[in-house]
Image (cartoon, rainbow, N blue to C red):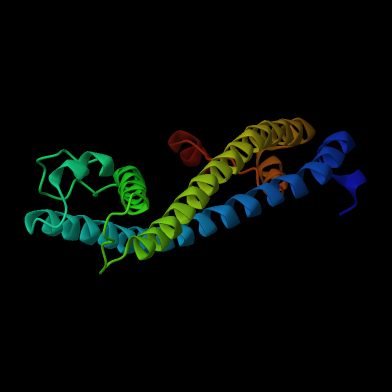
Length: 207
């Protein structure tokens, strides 16, 4: 069908021609970002488990060294730990692991620089590698969350405009066919996707 034969205005047709690619692109970008975020989230979860394991094991070894008298309990605060705390602090969330892991690494590096005997199995170097990998994934995933939200907001913004255009199209189509007999009007409107739902008494009248 030629654009000149449409039941709505040429102005609206041209507006649709320019708008539709933008809307499709926004939806595709949002879906791509959402899928990427989900995949990255799974990778982040894996890195979180590994890093938590290494940080937890290091703290346990540190406490064992203190129990054996190899390291004084007074060093615990430099690791962000209470001086009398013998348990591993809560590492159940990403934020907790970020905070505890950073303090533990800084504390061990500082103690080693002052001549303290290094802890091995795991070494702080290995803990740091696992921790920094986790932190990298955490920051990247955080950025992806922000990007996905922006793209979602953009789709919502365009959807509002889409709804308004659909209403305008429907109104123009109805106006185009308003003088036709009921059945013919419904048939012509239906070719544009405008479907009239008849009430019960209207169906009975037609029957």
